[in-house]
Image (cartoon, rainbow, N blue to C red; front, side):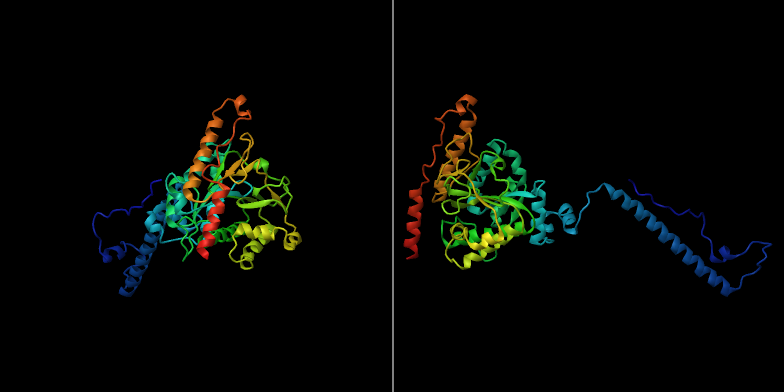
Length: 393
């Protein structure tokens, strides 16, 4: 809408004040004394000033009305990000808490569930882990739509920059004084810090009222996992070894790389208890500590409902899912070194794509199976643990 501008009526010649205040012949007022004329001049000036101010307000009102077609913003920082270059808008940063809330809200499903993964520079490089991870969503059976609900948590600046190039929902979780950009070898100090930082972060997500699936980026998504979850459970976790029963606290060996957690007071208290337990068991990573505390009386007291996920559907290189017709996810666990992991992940994706290209009748054949593990194996993991022990000694 084009603003309406009020124009003053033009005067053909300039009139003196004396002319303006002289009364017409025959007027009953007669001659006006000088002091009265001064008063009148002040009144005229005031009247003209008020009229000009009113006209200006009308112009501004009309102009403001024309902004109705611009997008609205709930806060000033959103406006600055929209109209200013990125370099300048960074001068108006939201608090991390508000930024996280916005990212989670944008990615959440209707029931406030999000899918989360973490990423550092070592896994963010082109043709590295993150590309294989996203490719699995695109080629999986019914998994592409789930990418809309995936939030990548970047642990360093380069990982965040790469995330912005390959995905829509990214959040920077950069810890001061800690470098998570390099490859963190299993059980090294950097690895332990990274794992516990993850637990701390996931606690904050639950406190915000969001359910989540947490997935390591070296897990390939081949099918929608939701139909395989237990409806009544509040904390569900994949396993390095599955005993055969989802309720078996003693024999199931959980793997923290894949969890489905519902937000409520019990899960929040459980995650806080889990994180606090790192102080009781220093030098252990989150998964080992979980194995220790999973049957702690505290968990019984709060009434947390735990279920362990079957490796037939949520497999890994420790215990592969044998049937490609049933598998939902496959984890490159029990693997030492990035190059070995990438090799087996690529092979895993190739096997899946080849399987998906088969006619339906051949997919049911018992001869269809994985070619992994190859470079990854339990032996390589034991070798890595021995190297770490020798290094510490």
